[in-house]
Length: 382
Image (cartoon, rainbow, N blue to C red; front, side, top):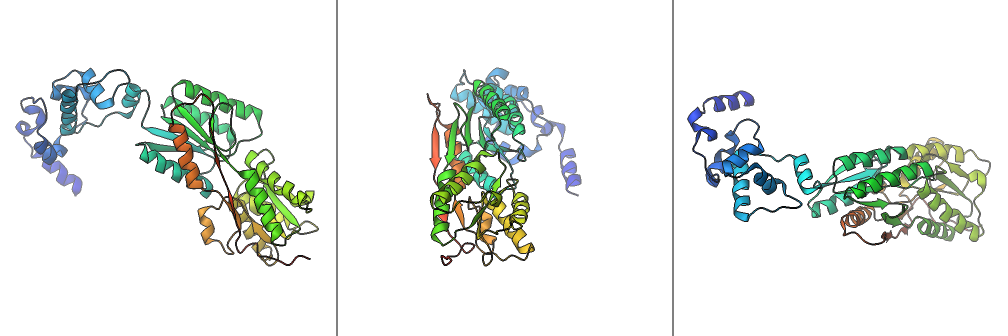
């Protein structure tokens, strides 16, 4: 019905009433355009806007799309913009990117958008981007680091204003070299980059206190009376997982409570990885009193696995994670973790990516704070 009504309305407009049938104006009457601009049919071209404003196509392009090298007189720009509004002309984003050298959006590459860790960082990136007048395009590697360089190449071709890559790096020289080359190619084209995680040479990076945060957690749990620990360690080549595991186990060794080798379980850096790893950990000969998962989604999977096995958290085994993701507010018992201000991480990465270039790569360090909750209650020291 709505389409039929709109068609009838257009049919009822006579040719003499169409805008192109009127004598050409140097600028569209604002009141007329405001009331009737929706009546202008068809795809409007930049040439039509230029003709309506009485300027060349080049001038119209510079007035609407901007230019890295040329400016337009204010009165001409006003005429062109009035004509564009009158004709309901929508500029081509690719044309604007060509004219300005860059688009008005930035690219964000994450490992898994379904993971609340990355969605919180993305929220911070979006907040900071909006403040800068930019939009965000998101790409997810699905935990495949080999996909990162390909996404950078796509964003390079699309002339993204900046690129932010969030997530721990892998101990894989071939993958890291490919990423370095892709980022260098992008920066040579005029773009800017910031990483969240481990630095790459000559790239600005937001660095999270993984090792010290995990070390502080180990001390806090030891102070709560735990002496026998297990760890869901993530993949062996995942540098964030490695940093967190090292900080945790090395501190416990210093405290006289080394983690036994069979109680360190390698698994995927995901909820399902934590679930699968916890199943194996519960089967070892000497079950740990407390299990540390190197991220919160793994800890959540571990708690589910314990419940399915009839093991009570925290009565039979305590569990702790890392990150303090927002979904923890819905977990029972409340999970002990290490809080990382993830939204602030996203804001810091965006501001770093959009900052004026520096002679040396910049590192922004983000601290982490232990949060003790119901999943690791104090227990008597035996």
